[in-house]
Length: 146
Image (tube, rainbow, N blue to C red; front, side, top):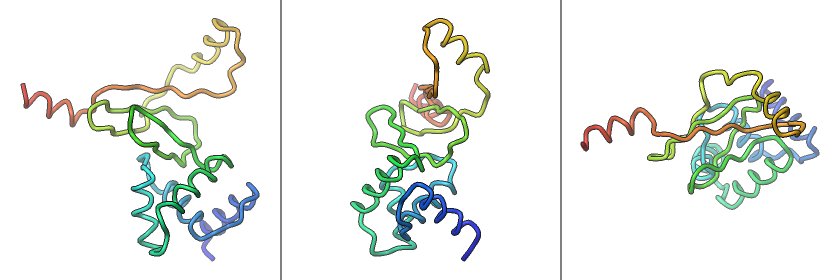
């Protein structure tokens, strides 16, 4: 068994989940991309390695993995949920035109959490910062239309 396969199976077991081939492949797919894919995209990738898997199985496993804290579900705009296997602190930027969802490639001010706590009286446990805008590709397309 490969080292990464063993780690994925241990991740599943440590969250009290029976290790199935589909779950291990889903986690591997999410850990192997920097984009934030939809369930349909994940289904297409998993099917290449596990041809008999159904879209329903993908959705059930994504929900279970999300509930157990092994992946994150992201919802932006009116589009379908996207999934993220990256648990390092990071933020997202969403294109309002094409729906592209990416990680923000710059650091957000480190005192932001402390300032929010001080201003609002909350003890911040976690946060998600979301930027919405128009990506460079869509900006180019819009400029060509004008």
